[in-house]
Image 1 (tube, one colour):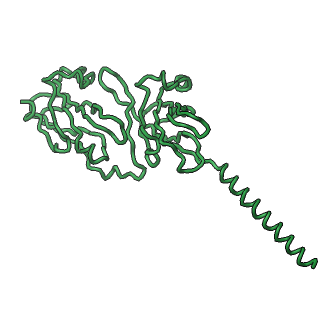
Image 2 (tube, helix red, strand yellow):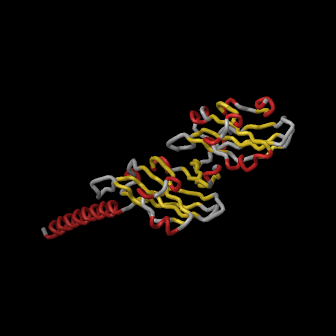
Image 3 (cartoon, rainbow, N blue to C red):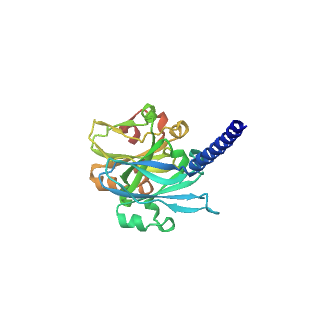
Length: 274
């Protein structure tokens, strides 16, 4: 009789301990946090400072609002992971929208709030959950008289963009004189919310020379198909105007409509300008 009672008691104790262990395991699982980060690579020659403004609703908050991350130093040619927030599970990342604030001064980045940050310091990231397996490549582009503006693209981490057909094209100068050329490409880069004009590097082309206009790699098939552009042409005496030019300031005689770049292979400047 004593033996049976002892066995029953041990069984009850075992079930109790087992239940406690399961409850403890569930509590530990509930406490586990899953960080969500975005990756940024600074390809400029100067140190930049970045923070991410994310429009989201946290689990403990009843409403959506802009949340600001810490400020991160982006050294040249270095990749940095910016922590957006931590979540209770990998699937708990909300359909939040992000805007990257980029500054050349740490104090400005630290004091910045979304509502008062100038547009030239903002990069629209769209939905942050779409950036999970991508790296934001951050550079600086000189856009004519407007000056330096932040330029960016989204590169898949599996480097599939290297297999994407390029839209680069060749310009051949047969005019008998030296010219300066630049392309204004109306494009929508990977995950960008809008189409915009980007200016290529200004290139000096001597007579009878051929040079390549470098166009950003665009991985989306639809966007690449409908990317179009204009070639801007300047005399040798107009070097300053070539570097200061923007698409909006171009004169009609300086513009050559290239149409869809997907249909362009080699262009002869003599045929297009005469």
